[in-house]
Image 1 (cartoon, one colour):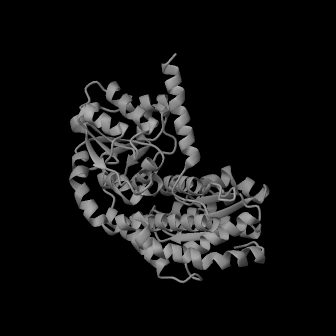
Image 2: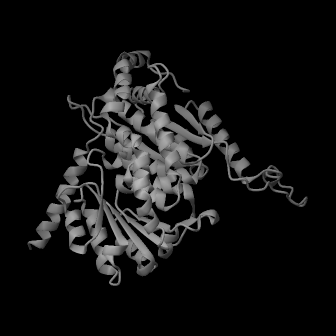
Image 3: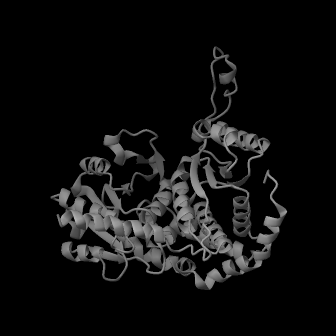
Length: 433
């Protein structure tokens, strides 16, 4: 860290650290996510035939929102080379498969109810060669129900009973009624894992299997990350330290946490983290005190141009986590003609694009340190399945530890539920007129 923290705040938090550490250790028996990780090999084998059936299609549409979608998007981004500025009409092509992965379908995650984008995607797909996967834990999410029913009614030649699967809880809900009406097979969503924590279950594993991701390595990375935390001490447990330092900075007026990742493949991971952090921690404790900090996504080197001026010249109310890697795609170094003599160009000679990315991430870190910005840097060897599993588990644990420090329940979202209820009430009012 590059700023001095109030010793009284830090000492007070260290007084709670033992309790928080014991809470993290006890997760091995109290947190269903660990249970599902332990049986992930069995889950993967059960899902392989389903994934293989989806792989027979040219395209697969995945319907859902929030935690039902973001985990799968973050994981399958490992197989994608995003097109930076695809036109709206070609929204489904925003994630083109790499040449080595052309045997798998193109995945189209539709996670909103923007009708223009929805229609744009459907109009550019062939219903006969497209599979559809709907994901909704409760089965009563209005957005996902609208997506599912609109797709079925828009594609007149689409056969839901053979081309579609639904992941939802094994209990009475609206999505089960839809499945029964259209004879769609259902896959059980774990009842004991909420959407934003569900990436290590069928919710994240099935899309990843369809796309050919090494989900066994993904789950193993998560298991190792948890075990490393559980085998540590309160002084060496990294998720505990990360939570403590962010809670301490909140005492000093830090209201925003910026996740600055130097890889396009981590952009969806940053969005996944934003939901995890915001929805788990943005709450009041039993005394009525409000907690949480606002998560912001930044991608290097793009946001060096879009956001860095604010971070360096604006209010000091932000904590920064840099995700960096020293491994870049091995593009060949430039071999420039002698006629290019401008200093901005000559610095690039004999250097690759990856060299420039690494230089920029290091330069940004050094600049922010010199400006006294509170930050930390997490470096991974490569953006791959094992490291992504490790990162996701790490940030889950850090989130749970922060919730423990703040005495809030990380697993509910009462404010969100209130909005859902009101939206349905407005629709019923309109129908009754």
